[in-house]
Length: 503
Image 1 (tube, rainbow, N blue to C red):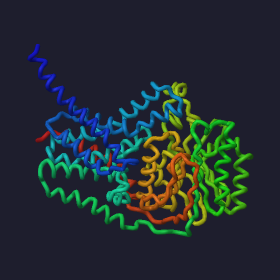
Image 2 (cartoon, one colour):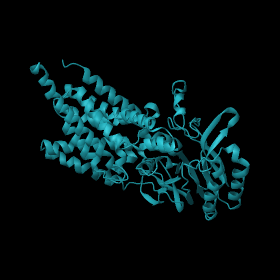
Image 3 (cartoon, rainbow, N blue to C red):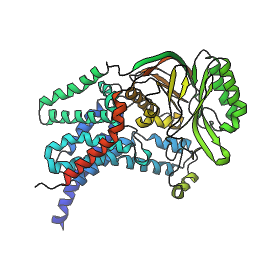
Image 4 (cartoon, rainbow, N blue to C red):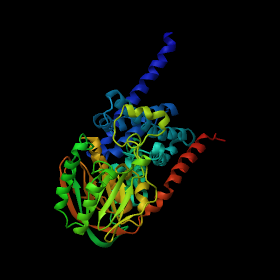
């Protein structure tokens, strides 16, 4: 009995230790992102993970260790989902915890699958398969941006908005930068472990190339500058949808607006106006439009557009004043703005109380709004997490506008992470962005992804600035159209070749 059980115990201990170390490495990785911005960790920690896994391990062992790495990565990276569900969605703690844990468990599968495919390839290609890992990482991060409508939050490349690697964003986007981080991690492993110091040149060449690319102007200024004001209302989520607070909320935004009629465009956040468009059409929307026209200005506000008789509600933006237009949010948040498989999951509505959580997505193609010489590329909250959604307005749009209500996240790391994501969209598109939020972080971002001005969190505040639109396209505009095929081809070819037996 003892002779049989002892090897299992001995084998179990290294597996347990390996998985625990992987969990710790993953737990540290969110420190590479905002608000901590320790971006070198996005290279160092994957290097340590590679070092940990480059032994005679089975595909199963690597997959499990990769899952633990991903579990730590996302548990400490998206813990704020629990806050949104419990603190603001009124879900019971067990329900909020269960949904958050399930989300983390699913997200952890993607790095696990990338690492498992690398291990599978190693069985055929040996040590050379290590160079396939950046391609696999690219592919599975792209998949994470699509499955279940996608949640590419904390994709590795976002951590590099303040590093030299940001220069590659206009070429290969956030997933490409993530692959470069993994490539640099491999070079670091070879330098430290194998003492192959020639690879140190790669560690220098990649950031040096990024620094040179940051000097390239991929797009050009276009038209007259636009004076833009953003109003950050700082409305607590607990009172946002209360009927008796509707006038008070409007008054907060209106008092700020009255001070900025010299602006061409005044931007209010996502669903800044309480109630539906039908309820506030005569009392608020028409007077707002009239006042903006009289002052030769425009107000862009978030609200819920409704066709109540048909049971249709949109998360929308409405332009009022000298110009007019309507935009409906296309990419809705799963469980927050719509419920998939309603026949199966409708019971969740009994556990989570989120106002207007059964919205209709807007059409993919919508008319672009015009203010002065500028055409606006609009996105609402979660949409700016997806390059493909922002790119829909290009190349016609020469100025990006994102509105959000990050009050759902409370005083967590999520608002800062979201701002970093917005910076990446400006880098990829070569466009400045106006980002207006309810509680922060509202900011003006230039076409190089640099924050020009930002508001303090949890403060009623207005920001004003002259913004110039830009024309032209970055190489990423074209690369984005083929990266889906590249991701699928990378994964499929590597998997097929790995499964073939050596002749």
